[in-house]
Length: 262
Length: 245
Ligand SMILES: Nc1ncnc2c1ncn2[C@@H]1O[C@H](COP(=O)(O)OP(=O)(O)OP(=O)(O)O)[C@@H](O)[C@H]1O
Ligand SMILES: [Mg+2]
Image 1 (tube, rainbow over the protein chains, first blue to last red):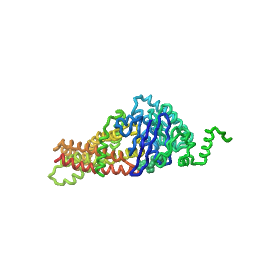
Image 2 (cartoon, each protein chain N blue to C red):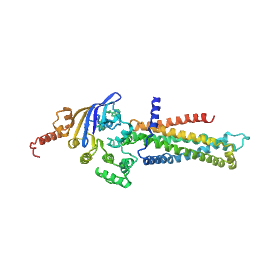
Image 3 (cartoon, chains in turn brown, purple):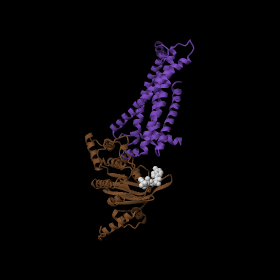
Image 4 (spheres, each protein chain N blue to C red):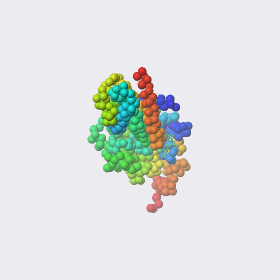
């Protein structure tokens, strides 16, 4: 479980995050949504300690990350898996070596066991026959998936994904969402996902945090979102007519009303 | 500004030392850097050493016109200038260009594409894992290159002297052993270690702390080379003043 208490973060006097408080529970997919530039990536980087926060606390299982010693931070970090928005794959290594890297660093597995684990993870993100390719030789969506494979290879307790399915086709996108959700439930991971994919919001949004210009505008589940009266949230989520229509249908469905014939 | 940079540089060096997360991976990284830094610069070091050696024989002969100075003196001058100055300083200035820009752009690229952050998140001490092996590999391989450069330079000087008819092989050999002080080899090695450290640490500093994008990587590697060169020359003078007087 991760708790944020009154987190502030700014750059050169300009506030980016203001007074963010939230609880991210284990075994649930916690989504952070918001328009481009609203501070999602900054918030995620604060949570993993890549940015020092200006004010507030970030608690990992009740202990404040920023008052930990370097050693304690290291222990937490070895339990963190993170997918970066730009994937951050090691470009001097092949796909296989990328995914294997955390295993080599932190496990005592034999080569054979490592290969097995790597192939298992690559298989789960639907990647085959790319093991020997370099990141520069695969597509953007494939890189994303390699990044996900690398972040789950050590069975993390905390999983952070910065836009896991931007740049993926809807079908692969669904597969990835489902995978992350399954892993989260199966291994009781505390998962935090940045996204602006409405499909993900509706499908796997156990707990949703809507950031608007750096502060928390709304919080709730994917069920609550249907009934939310928050105008900013509504105009963000149900931006297109198609989505408004979908919302209406979902509302009727949930109220047990008969859906109009297709 | 300069002081804060220097402070950050010292903190970077201090930050390199922590217990490695996995000795084997650090060792692997060290070996990789040895081949990247040492073996990859072998070619350029061979070329410049051969030419500098050859040129110094020809030019020394040109300067020593007096008939009372024995021919063997040429060899002596070539030997001493090669060992004292050309092999360590010129080689390292060139290596500052080759190795320094490579280190800075490699680290800069890893910084900009968030690969360093990714390592950090995994719980790896990135200064220890990325910078320490580079400095260690430089400290091992660059002095070796410098010693190689001494031998090649003197040898090329001899060949150039014989081929152009300036000096006979016998005279050259005689000059080589004449008044030889082993201390200058020690001095040259002190220089080589100092310069190796300067090149690797300064270039790592500029690469590791890059902010921005591809443009800044280019700028950082230029800066790394220029600043390394300046510090090599400063150290060269300081060491000479300190150890030769
Ligand atoms: N390193 C930084 N230095 C200064 N300002 C920054 C830095 N990183 C982000 N910002 C600023 O913080 C704000 C939020 O950026 P952030 O990357 O968190 O947006 P985001 O919500 O992730 O957007 P997107 O959906 O496009 O990824 C932006 O205005 C950006 O200019
Ligand atoms: Mg972002």
